[in-house]
Amino acid sequence: MAIAVLMPVIMSAQAQVNTKKVKIEDFTEKTTKVVLTGNIFFDQSLKDEVQNRWRISPFEFCTLKEFEQLKTDDSYYFLMTVKGQFRKEARPGLTMLSVMKGGAAAEKGISKMLDVVTVPVMSTDDPSGREFVFLPALLDIIQEHILRSMETDVAGYSGLSSSNMDISEAETKDIIMAEEDLADGISEEELESLEADGIYVADTDTVDEMMMSHTPNAVLSYTVYPADKAAGSFCYKMLIDAQTHKLYYFRKHRLSKKFGAGFLPEDLYRIAER
Image (cartoon, rainbow, N blue to C red; front, side, top):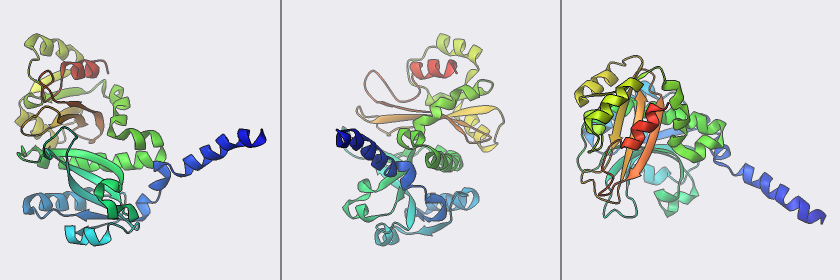
């Protein structure tokens, strides 16, 4: 009987040792290798923003070839662009930024590496250009999430959606939605009713300018989805503080005939209740 009672306790202790929080506890002490893509325009922007914004660990830039040589070394973490392909997609539709930990598992492919955090950046086939506007914020979001994941497994395992718990902190801020970030079928009456809750719609250029100007007390929309909006793919929706780059909202939904790309009415109602 004593053995039967003790086994769950021992197993529980072992599980705690292997949690994500423990696996990444050395993040700030190890070098993050920023893997360049070979795309001169995106690489230059990534290099500039990392040099200006990366603060939580030492970093160095490397090529894809160097990544292949170093990926099994657990002395390094890697920040790199990856293409996301979901089960029902015929081909990858999204480009994402991922932070992964090096280690022996990398021999079996990138998908086997420990994923610290992944954030959607742009459509693979038809980038809008907004990715350059929001890249500084996305890098700050990645860093903030890593620090939160080092403190609690709740953040580590729930991913960026853990930020949704903070939406109430944006109660006194204006939510500005870019026109192109709204799904089709949202009526003028619905939008007008949301203004009473501090949710407004503006043209996309205005929203992007607010992000670049770090407008205070403004939380701005950003969506990422495949160019073809094919059924079975996913649309990611974010609300980001223009001044602090805090992520207040992160959700995704599967695209279908019923649910198109952009913020859905149910998203707007969730946000209105903040």
